[in-house]
Image (cartoon, rainbow, N blue to C red; front, side):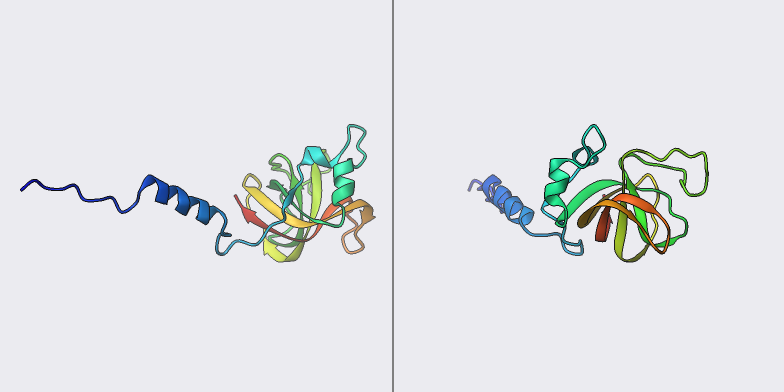
Length: 152
């Protein structure tokens, strides 16, 4: 008697259906992130004014991607998100050049700093306009408030 091939448990159609269903389910253990993504290029006009997109999203939850600039201490309530990795703490060296593409990230709760060259995804409420933090004296033009991040 000839041996019949065993039917495959997973057909191409069932694999595609399963992949589609999995894509619609949030990953367990990861925080929920905003629907709107803003890039550093989207934040400013060529004249360094806030873009129409940034003005429209002010006060709304957004997501940005970048790198955590080296902070002053290991556990931090805020950090600076940069477009490119920045190895030098700008507060520690007076000759350091701050990158043009930065945004202050105020965390929902203090966290431990991560490596400056590790890409991250940050979610928070966009706040624009020049502001000086009373506690640190840090001046910022744009901030993400009540933020959280994950490593990519």
